[in-house]
Length: 546
Image (tube, rainbow, N blue to C red; front, side, top):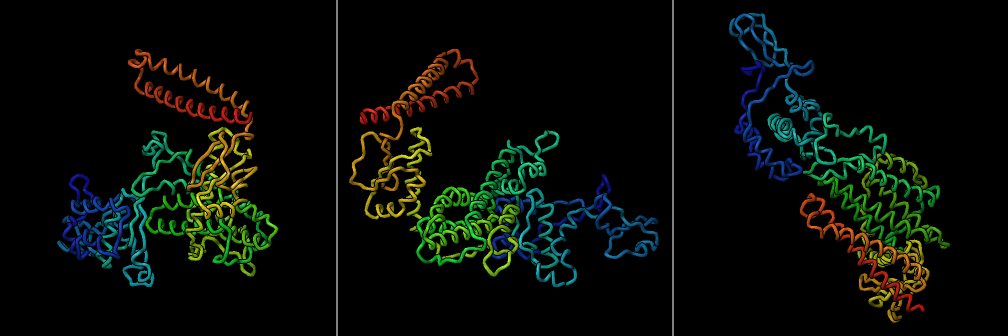
C-alpha cells in the first residue's frame, strides 16, 4: 500500500509469526543453538528481540536516482496498482496498455538485506555462493541493528535457509573526550585525516583499538592519540636497537628447549603468554584487550626489561652466548611485529622489511605471514617467576632511590638478605643483571651480614633489600635541602589551615573550592610527614658516620 500522507509505497506488515515460521524456530531458541549466529556484545540481544516483537510497517521507497526501481505500475485509465516480478504489458483490470512505473527506488534496507548473498551470484547457485555463504562476521554499528541487520537475517533465513553471518560484532560510537557526540555545530569533531597527518595512521588506529571496549563508546581526544604515538616511537626505537646488534642475515637458530639464560627464558615465556592472550582476545572480539596486551608486552617487558637485560649478552666474548642472544632478540622482535601488525600495519611492515631474513630464504610480506606458532618448549612458568623475583629486587632499589631523592643514575651499595639458599643461588646467578639494572657500585648477598643502623630497606619475595645511606649521598647537604623544603611546606600548610579555620571562608566559598583546599591540606601533610621521616633517616646516618 501507500502512505496516506506522502503516498510513499510501504511494505506489507511483516509479523513475528512470519519470521518464526521462516526461521523454523523462535529467535531466542535460534540464538541459543551452538554453531549459529552470535551477537557481540550479547547485551544487544534484548534490543534485537524487542524490535522483532514490536515490528511495524516500514517505508520501502526513496526519492533518489540510483537503486532498484520499485516494481509497481499504475494504470492511466482506471488507476489500478499492479505489483509484479516482470513488467506487465496491459492492466489486468481494464486491459489498458498505458502503465506508468513508480519513479521511486527501493529503500537502502532492501538492497542491504540481500547483500550477503546477492553479491555472490544469487539467485544462481554459483561456486562463490557455495563457498562463502554464510559469511564469517558482520561488523556494524548498533544503530542499524534492526534496520539492516535484522532484515539481512530475515532474508538469509528465507531464501537460503540459514543466517548470513556466524558472528555479528556491534562496534561503539566515537565521541569526544567528554562523551558528547561529535557535531559540526558544537565544533567538537576530530578530523581523522588531520590526526593522521599530525601523529601518523598507526597512532590513530591503535588509539581507537585500545579504547574499543565492547559495549562502551570511545572517548577520543588528541592527547590520547599523541600518547600512543609515543608507543609507535617506542617500537621504532626498539627495532633500531635490534637492527644495530643483528648481523646482515638472520641469526642461526638455537634450540630453545635447551639451556638459556634467566631473562631469555622469561621473555620467551612472556611472548608465549602474549600470543595466547592476544589470540583469545581477537577470537572474542575484545580488540581493546588485544591492543593493551600488545602494549604491555612491547613497552613493559620487551623494551623496559629485556633489551636492557640482553645488552651484556650482546657484548659477551662468548660466541655461544652472543649468538643465542641475537637469535632470541631477532625471534621475539619478529613475532612481536606479527602480533601488532593488524593494529599497526604501517610501522610494522616497514620494520619487517628491514629485518634480516634467514639465509636462503626470500623476504616476505608481513600481511601474508601466519599468526606466530605456539612453542610449548618455551612455556617455563617457574623460570618466569624466578625472573620476576629478580625484577622485584631491582624495582625495590629504584623505589628506595626515588623516595630518598637519590638520582636514578647514582650507583649505591646494596645488601641482600635472601630468605633461603635457593633464593641466594638465584640472586648470585643474576648478579650481573642486578648490578647493571639497579646501578650498584657494590653488591653483597649474605643473610649473615648485619644491616647498618642508617639504611633504607624493603622486602620483596621474602628477601630483605637494604641500601646503606653512609657514603651514598652528601648527608649534610641533603639535610640542609630537606630543612628548606620542610620550611616551605610548613608555610604552605599554615596558609591553607588559616583558610580552613576561617568560618567565613568555609561557609561562603563554593563547595568545590573548600573541597579543593581540604585536599591540598591532606596532600601537604602527607608530603611533610614523608620528608620528616627521610630527614630523620639521614640525620641518623650522619651521626653513625661521625
